[in-house]
Structures are given as structure tokens and as C-alpha cells.
Length: 136
Image 1 (cartoon, rainbow, N blue to C red):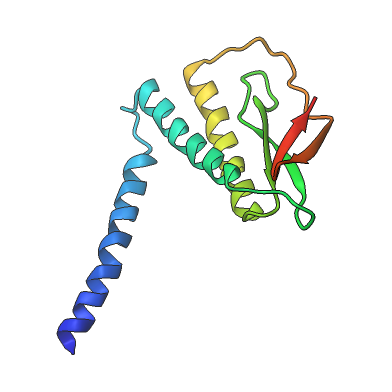
Image 2 (image 1 turned 30 degrees about the vertical axis):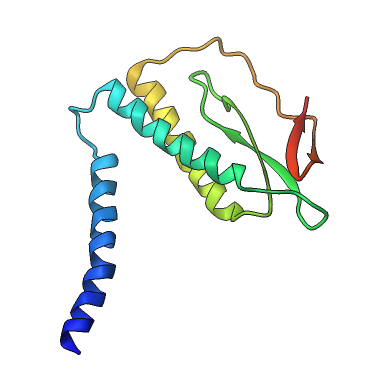
């Protein structure tokens, strides 16, 4: 029985420990990080967010929404992420908020510049073939 409990603990603890270790590596606050390292971290977060948003579907029971995504160096979002309420919207909105903050810090840290144009949000969002689609 003790051996089974130990195995169960190890099956839970090992992946948990791996996730914690990878998190420390991925989000280390080390001055030796290069711009490429920081950019790669942003890319991983961006893909996680976009993949979550892509799993959303729309129908009569869901609502299509959008959220400012990314941070332009002059301020404001880089674009807008379209999603539906069929997913964990609190999780998505938290991830986007964190991404936007990290993106703004990246821009400042590395002196990123842009055209400072304002990205307009969609005028509306429609549900087409169970996918939320932005209308501009």
C-alpha cells in the first residue's frame, strides 16, 4: 500500500515539479536575457492565447467578444483578439492582460518603436459557421 501511495505521489509531483521548474526558467528575471530570449517568451505566450481563443465557438448560447491584444510602443493595443464566451473567458482575459503587460515592458526595455497609428476595434462581430468574425 505504501508503495502505491508513493507511486501516486510521484506521478502527481513529478509533472507538477517540472511545470514549476519550466515556469522559473521561462520567466526568469535575469539581466543576461537577450532580446531574442524575451521575444521567444512573448511568442510562447501569444501562441497559448491564440490557441485558446481558437477553441471558442459561437452559437445562440454564446456571445462573440473582442479584447485589445498586444501593446504598441506608443500606447494602445497592437490589434484585437476575437473570441466567444464558450471558453474560460476569465482565463483568456487574464492571459491577455499579462501578455499586454509583458509586451509593454519588452517595448520599453528594448527601445521598440512603431508608427504610432491607432488600431481601430471591430465595428461589430458576427457568428459565421460557428466562428466569431470581426467586421471592420
